[in-house]
View 1 (cartoon, rainbow, N blue to C red):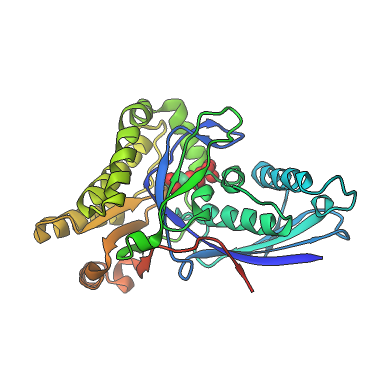
View 2: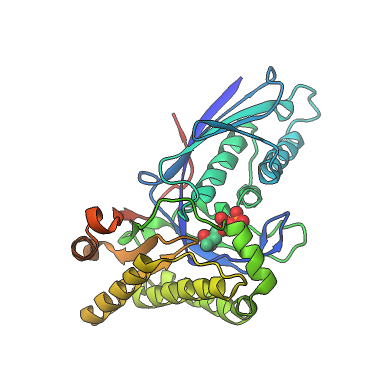
Length: 344
Ligand code: DP6
């Protein structure tokens, strides 16, 4: 029997992925860019066992047994075994023929718009790749579990290339810059609600593709320019430009959600109050010091530089005391050096 345990962090996009051109292969309509958070705070932990004695694949999520007959999990398992077989020289009892038992848990709320599926599938695919001796790029496999998962396989700043091949072979993630390039960068997660979101990202974006005119404009006219501009800002450590683009892209993504019919409303009054606070904070500072971004949920992720963390945290504590407004916050999370890793 082979057994392995891995941990993988979440990533928070600054150029959002929203909309697929291929639902089965999970191919996106646009490139996206993110930073990977330190694995210490928010992570998925997955243990995978493979044995010639197992009669079937099995899966436990946060302690509860779930079906393995789900297309995305099957995509990942089949692709891992196909790649493992290529390395085995036709061995009848090679590891590629073994069934797997998978146990995965998150140390943060699942499906509350906190990138839980990204960490979960990155962790699963990394663990499977170790166990089944699969080498080379595996981000294209993690992508088939959950699109944004491909970005959690790398530390630092990461780009998911939309690619153009029909089979998805060039829709992979690459590292733009390691965490050491901009070590002062911090991410503050404000948990406004840890409830499961009403509309999942997958079905929300499916509806946007069907109904939103704004999404077409975003994909053709806005994201390509923004992607190039934010890469330059990351490379030159230009926080002002980085922050401006991050906030504008989050706002446009939520505008697309509202342009979807029926609309997807992910942000709530507290989220909007946080947006107002950050704009007021930046204008009082005379400079852009903090950027907000929201995924498919009400929780805010704030990008800022390390020296700004104590001041911002004290302002947030005054305005949204955790006991009154229910905003919990995680202190300045650094960008992660190594993304997924094996636990010993
Ligand atoms: C708003 O990767 O969760 O967080 O590919 O259908 O699993 P699927 O969607 P998912 O969508 C993430 C959407 C987002 C933006 C982002 O992370 O880029």
